[in-house]
Length: 46
Image 1 (cartoon, one colour):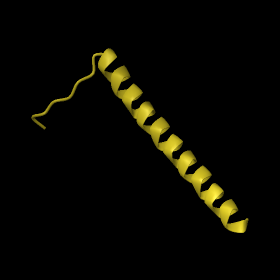
Image 2 (tube, rainbow, N blue to C red; image 1 turned 180 degrees about the vertical axis):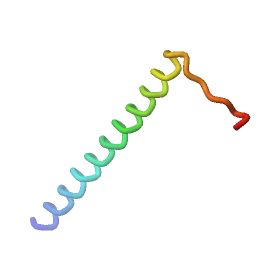
Image 3 (cartoon, rainbow, N blue to C red; image 1 turned 135 degrees about the vertical axis):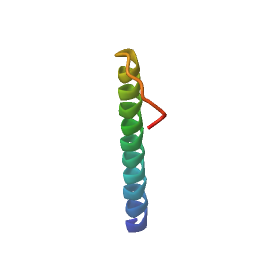
C-alpha cells in the first residue's frame, strides 16, 4: 500500500504542476490581449 501512496502523491504533484503552467500560459495570453487592446505594438526595426 505504501507504493500506491507514492504513486498517488506523484500524480497529484504532476496535476498541480500542469494546472500551474496552464494558469501561467493563460495569464501571459491575457496580458498580450490587453496590450493589443490598448493599441500596443512594437517596432521590428530595433
